[in-house]
Length: 394
Image (cartoon, rainbow, N blue to C red; front, side):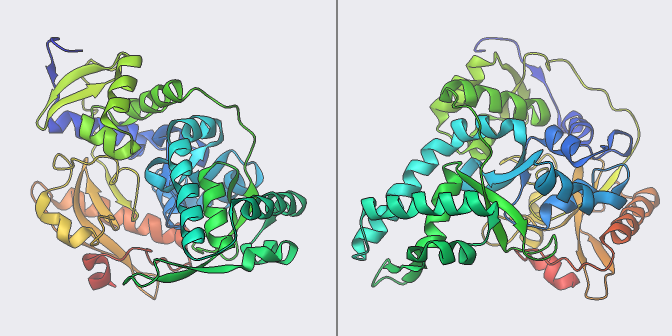
């Protein structure tokens, strides 16, 4: 890659790529949740409402967003909600779970298990051998039940109710149950996954299920596979973007880039990378588009360096203090405002960047708001991570 002449890819072309490959332009919208997930590689799942809202924004016919997403997640299991990059919960295509586990999960899982055992030992809780017994008993109970909540599993394995104090004497001291920490560890290890929620599609209380079986893959090969999939959707991207999205070390990012034969291009931020098949320019089809994307949408959160689609001055209103993005309004590949849903169901929005935004844009945004209100129906959506503009609009 070094020494090659680099083609310049400007912000305009990157925005065109974004609209096409992220399924946001109206003429490239998808037919199913599986098609959306396959196109995006991963959908953020830490806020339960994000997945249906992200899917609905990209479906040609959003009217069946909820039943189709639930079918894919809980009946066909063609989509799987599990821990992935940066120890975050995502929804992945089922065929990608082995790649995610090998490329990102194994390292994080080892840290999580070591942290649990360290916290239990510091609190004088039972040891690793005891925890192993509880773990095996819990997995057996879950296999018998099919799906179960932590409380239901504790009926079969009462030791899950064991409590211990962590960070004793510090400002963030707290008490954990074994079930909370153990199920989290098993999730990162790829042994259990989130199942159907207890309530509606906005509920944050989930059942657990045994993870689908998948082959054990070579770590380096899995990392190359995952990076290639992501770069095909989100390229060009910088090393900083790749390191941030994957949570890998720089050496791992560079090894994966070399393995897939990535090509260097020049970006406003410096050197970026595309797949070997994606060096050529992408022309603008000339069809403007608008979108209302939810909090934590994978497009808004797809890159660490975001100035090419999100003006820095908009960030204080659209992000919370931890860096989580709220609901955003898009016009032709850039964020221009935010939206919220009020208690009566009305979808309200505000433009924060009006450069190049005229009547056509406002009409398109209004149509998207109506489209969203139409399929959400009586459901009320409040983002898990509230942002200043979203709270103000509500």
